[in-house]
Image (cartoon, rainbow, N blue to C red):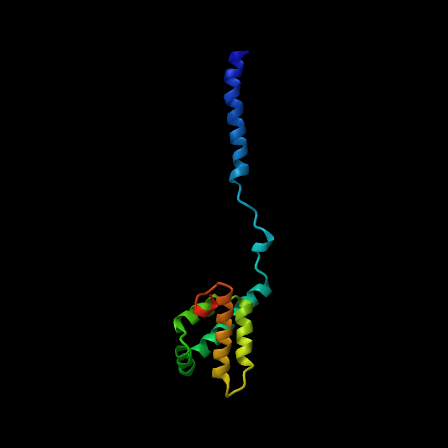
Length: 132
């Protein structure tokens, strides 16, 4: 009986290991959240368009001068605009488009200031020392 168990035990272990390999090595099925819907693709394109509009406004010389006058680094503002979520970028772009024609610089600066202030208060950024 011992000789049978001595030969049978390694065979059973090898069969179990080899039998479980296809289960372990099988590729994971793609979940439903990995699928990209048409709406997701359109939202992504809209988010890029919103960021481009914000960058166009920030590229103006008068806006840059006002940001520098207020002590804000322009490169940091651009990095933060790039880090905005699509919803935040859409909200900021909509606010910038709703401003009246003559007040766009002041309104744009105010919108950028408010967004930076909120992100600074939430601890996501470190621009204004008075929020600590």
